[in-house]
Length: 448
Image (tube, rainbow, N blue to C red):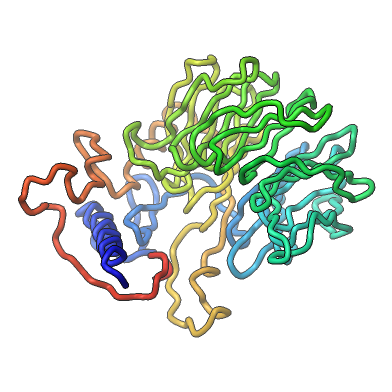
């Protein structure tokens, strides 16, 4: 390990120490996974010092849900699960609140969309570079066919990501993050009829309600590509924040919301003038360092409230967006570990897919990658949360702040995370209590 890598590693260890020393002093036991009864609800302590107090009821599913789709009648929800050991689809009965079916898929990623009558479900095949076609009937999935986009990885680098269905023409718009392209597929012939070079990794694709334009979020370009569906040409690129992920178009096609995972923000784009007219900060404090990772968004039934999944803050951020250019933050809701998807039901219930579930777990029986390997140990969950009234939202918001290991009377979140001040005064930092040198294989902290 060279000198620069050692310095980076030591700084990383120091940050972890700050996480732990930042936990409240009243905790009698600070072991990750430990649960205790608190004022609001039972909490689970995570290895990084954060606490989990997920709102609502919890449904256990498979590893790392990355997308969630709800049927029009809101009887069923389906998740695409793209964990380390196993990829799958989970079908959830929303009335009984149970996983009714789990379908193992060789490879999948977040792409998930129905056709017009919901008889077919199109599923991203990830690095297999194809789209699976499932028949969907009364809550049951059956694999029927596929659309081949290219040869499987590593022969071709395509990697299917977000998708949307263009009814009328019976076309499927398929985004790809490795080939930086959007593929137009004819569902009837199961052929690619056009490839559009986007110039950057495509994460999500959404077609507007008039079905005359599609919008693709471009990870590396900090932009949205606007595609004219009459000729499948890019007609505009609209600037967003860094790492734009999930997109959302209002029913009147006037506003486009874009979650920016690297900027703690959601861009609100005016589709009439093709420019961003608002930037909503989703983090717990407006001056918090980047790292909240907003990655999914949805609106309530009348489109007055925007819900933002803050993956690394384990919460939802809520905004009143009823008045254009005058949106305001109204509170937070605690979720499970690493929320990846948020959706809203017409009966005022919120669905949240939690990528890592409800707790960290030990792996004392680990011997090989098939037995308690950390990459496949955590199972995802779905939370079903009743939309809170003002008092309940206030309580939820207070709990979200209690779940963070940081506390600052001056709300100086940026300063809290700086172990070494930007201008050094030559004195020892009071935040550094111990320095450990750990010589270990280069792995992420949760794996170590």
